[in-house]
Image 1 (cartoon, rainbow, N blue to C red):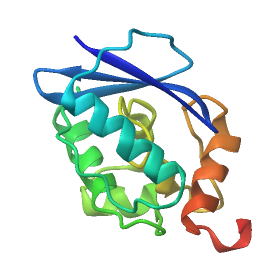
Image 2 (tube, helix red, strand yellow):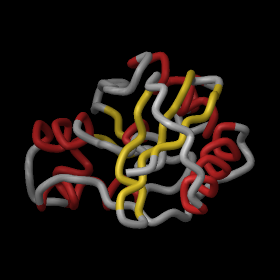
Image 3 (spheres, rainbow, N blue to C red):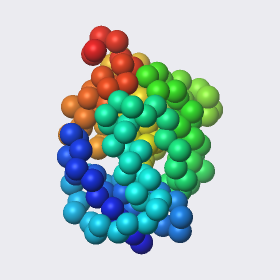
Length: 151
């Protein structure tokens, strides 16, 4: 499977492609420098997003996960740039509980593009499983202006 890496202000990100779709984004992994058209486009879109000039990704995605995880990933993709939802909001929408929502967020294999950083707890930030933890989540929320008291 092809993998391309880019240097960003979040650190090195490696984007993995499988059968014509993005399947993973890894933090701080060297990976190869495969140049497929999809990986080049994914790198360009990720750079543009992190520069603040792209609001919506347009990439074929194929994250691994069961039915609930897929539903949570889609719910996260449906949250507009600059907006947030709580674990409870998603749990209500998906007729489940907050804990499975949090587990699905933590298992998100395509962070940033599938915006798990837009999911907050009822009382604050919640968690973030990407490199840098909450500092990264805060930085992404600030980039989007999606959490007013952080801006």
